[in-house]
Length: 111
Length: 269
Image (cartoon, rainbow over the protein chains, first blue to last red):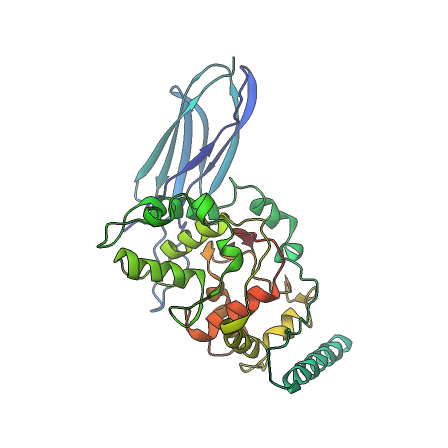
């Protein structure tokens, strides 16, 4: 059984000006079990990682990445984004079992 | 060879110092002797990369635990239908300074208790909730959340009066050689800090950053989990987490770090 994908944290700058390139920072709680470790009985602990992350802005792809077993537990992902207008960012973390954790983050522009 | 000789000489001097301390006459407990007079936080021995994670509260993965602890703080548990907040209200006010003065003597129990044990005392005696296992995710989340409220405050445990015998036992554990390697805690953390132990830099073993996110374990760990690791490393048989031995040792370690700012939740390799 796949481990639960924890509550994600997402942070944007407090003040965003139109046209500004901002850094979107995300952190999610997950064990990222590599599939190469063994338990006390010597059996392989099955691989269980977040295998992909995608971010879209109003349906338009912004950033996506594939994750691999070498990535540590609780993956921290940060990427740039040019904020031209207000809208919603949709972020999706997907694990090996195909389970997803979604988060919607509003982008608000400073006047 | 020169390095080995220096190591042995250092260990000998420390053993002599410990012997002199023990030779003092009993009476009103004298001020204990502090081998490291100006303690340095483990952050002085961490790499810049590790500190970059610690110093950014967003990037620091321990804050995932802190958030879980904050939720548990406000969430009723147990037969009494109470949460931590029912008695202690706002943790940012009521828990400020708590991490800095624990472990502390508990008069009702007649012994020194750690922060973990105090959380469990509250749970069983006031909330009607089961104890949380020492070093479990739930308990580490709670102590990380409580500890954060004291961040930056100087460690300040009270070893006077009835607490003193527990302190002395902790000191004795610290200075007792153990394991197949026949080492005391200070063999590394007093005689050889700042030197390399294989790929690691030995710190002074100060406890002001616990509970800490340990990159090796990829989770938040409690101090006593780390102590078990230390005893295992010298090929000894570690006491159980939450045992009296480790509780007294944790008390002594907190006093060793007296004055250092609480860094909970720190990040260490």
